[in-house]
Image 1 (spheres, one colour):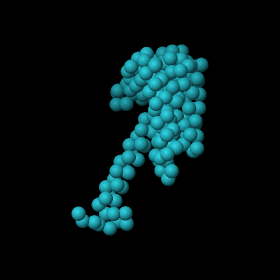
Image 2 (tube, one colour):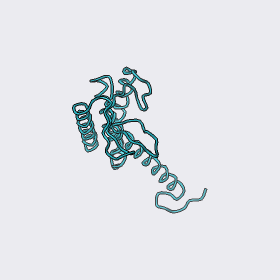
Image 3 (cartoon, one colour):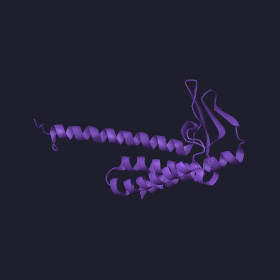
Length: 165
């Protein structure tokens, strides 16, 4: 249940911030927060990251439904005793559903976080996108840790003693 609460919190924050942008900013308007680094910019994206697959809503609907079903299955079956894994899945679930809500309601996603990193104008994104990225990074870290632990166990056995081949 805890991991679904994480997803729900992400969805609420994501939808609330997008609503604020739509209600208070003109499309294309940009507000400087930190000069040459961070801006709030009202943008609409009818594609995926970097505008890829623009206007392919049916594809996005199908992929999102499959991913959400998979995430719920993994949360239900694989998170017992694996807090970081569950948090990662909850973040991914919340991010996927946050953008899905936009696509279902508007046929586009509201983006507004605009950053310049080392003079690179990074594509504009939103809270759901951030949640997806953080969730995937955590998932990779969990997998790397599990792989390391499995190799260690194979080499030393469960009790930490060395076993030669």
